[in-house]
Length: 266
Image (tube, rainbow, N blue to C red; front, side, top):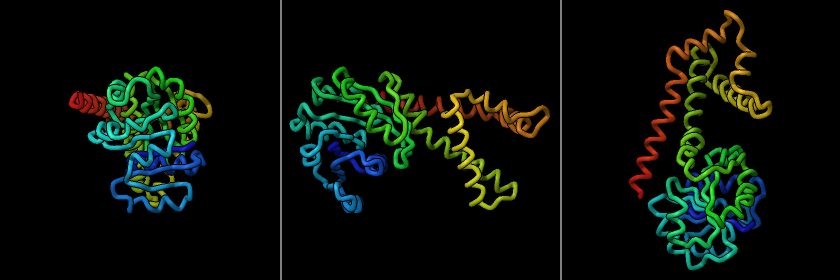
């Protein structure tokens, strides 16, 4: 696959790393205004670094846009005359609708919206996808790309805002929980390095257990809670202090914020 990543910032570079580490591209173009920051990617041999978006589009079939929302419309307008029947346009831009993309480049293009998260750089992203009518013919291609770097799920476009909160912002939410567990472990006597190692791998094990078993979280919780035991007492204290409630309220607050951002963009 000949892939261009237009906008090699944090997310764009995470996608690039995921694709390259999984050997998912025959050639790759990375674009950024200041190419000195991404020159190291040319060591891969099949990667071209450029500040010219039109050059990247001309030499690629799959175009992954990871630019700032305020720049996306101008970039699409600049390259639209180069788009042919072979191009698949994949956007990672939050709040930028398919309809809005179609108004710039036309309805006769393969258009897919994606919402990966930064875990894509280590092959563990949860990526949500949706597409226009024509783009649905290329959703399996997009899944093939993103499944190399984690797991993907096709959803209706109206759920993309919520998916952004759960999957993209969700990385930060889980990081905060791991940090809190680390701090608790330090208070119990572990040094900082050991505490983080315990927290990270326990979190990873919990998620893997659910993925592999297909169990409900409460089913696995029941296996480690005994009558009058330390686990249930700790869980109950966390609930008394509002653990689940604060998580849910945080998720809803993020969702309300992203909807306000979308309204300002309309």
